[in-house]
Length: 276
Image 1 (cartoon, rainbow, N blue to C red):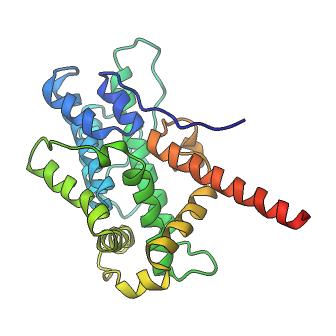
Image 2: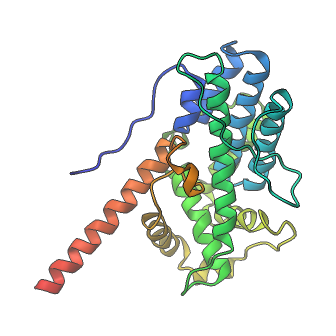
């Protein structure tokens, strides 16, 4: 069975757009309309902003921004479950029971799902950064992880390649950072990799060009990133207990399927060579 690319929704439901990863359109709709109560709308805008930071390679800023939305929801709903992480002042939400279809709490539940997905993916990214595979140095491995982030948040997102009118100064700064991946790819990926490393070690030094060169520059890094991506399970990339309970971003899913197809085609080519 041939896999085909998944299309993003075109609905005017900001939560659905955020579930699919279309944070730009979701943020715009949330600014324009009163689709939810004021506090939930503010939480959703915060989630959209955090997703924009992650696309820009500012993973630490995404982490702290998500914590704002998580704390806001927990302050209003004291019975919300949280993860019992020690040595962390960041509120990390756990997934509560799903309300019945049509229940007024559905919008809040889906917002919690979004926060759980984004926080969970960043937690797993931090753990992966400390789990270096054989054949790569730690710095090379982290740079590969940053390239996977680029492939799934920037390269595969059609919004990257379309003219944008940022909603405000902060949005313009995010778009400028994303544009660096296109115009100054080496600098942008090294910056993103530095931030991945600082998720667990805030005072870690910056990535250098020497790491970029040792990893084979962009062509080598892209190949390593596609291999890394092909070896992952289907997104969302969170803890196994959550993976099947959270929506997958469309662009991450499409990039993952492309990596899977590439791996399968290479395996098929090698099998033909072996039989020739």
